[in-house]
Image 1 (cartoon, one colour):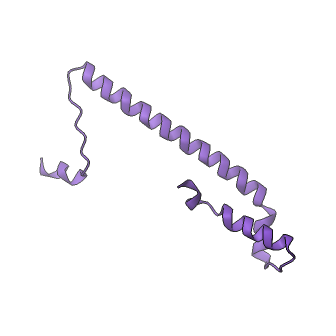
Image 2 (cartoon, one colour; image 1 turned 45 degrees about the vertical axis):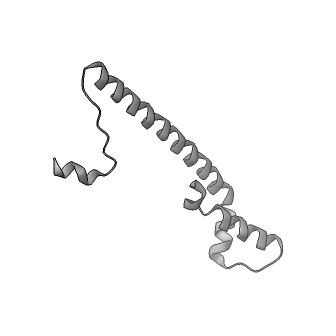
Length: 86
């Protein structure tokens, strides 16, 4: 899923073309030159996404537990349009 957001495959294709001796335009050459930086950034972003996801789940559990401990009820609306009908 995450790979759909990043141009990693396209950049690796440019690098493969360059290794085969195909001619790349100036923009493609610049992209290939920065491939290692891009891959490092992709790895960092994937790690951050995992961390944020983990933290958001932890916060949800905390909120639900807090509400239950204080006698409140947690209501989950799958369809947010239902909120306007109340």
